[in-house]
Amino acid sequence: MTILRMSDLDLAGKRVLIRQDLNVPIANGRITSDARLRASLPTLRQALERGASVLVVSHLGRPKAGRFEPDASLTPVAAWLSNALERTVPLISNWIDGVDLAPGQIALGENTRFLVGEKQDDEALARKMAALCDVYVMDAFGT
Image (cartoon, rainbow, N blue to C red; front, top):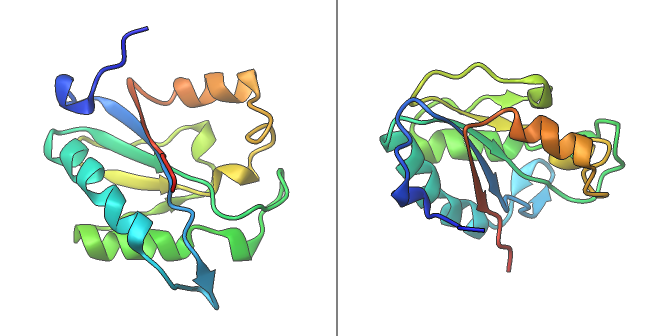
């Protein structure tokens, strides 16, 4: 298997799904350490500058699969990214069913751990994720 760098690819007009480690500590709805978020920015900026439509996904915490838990929502992360990237980064609840983004747009999919099968490496779920993109970028290499 050949693994390419994102910089090796023509991303213009492509749907790019970027898996990142945005699992940051949150207390009372506020991010208490943004180190992982800051580390995510170069990848996001590169994809956006090269004309991709970008869907970012990540997990946060350990919620139970199949149900929404407000304390595990990526809402504070979407707000942080919007501020850092100086553009709106909407949080999409049902992103697994598809997201319509124009080139140069970005959205954050709600916590992947809310999806049934995420922790079990479910093949059907993986196929649904793969169908959402032309390019998949694994940028989730936590500490």
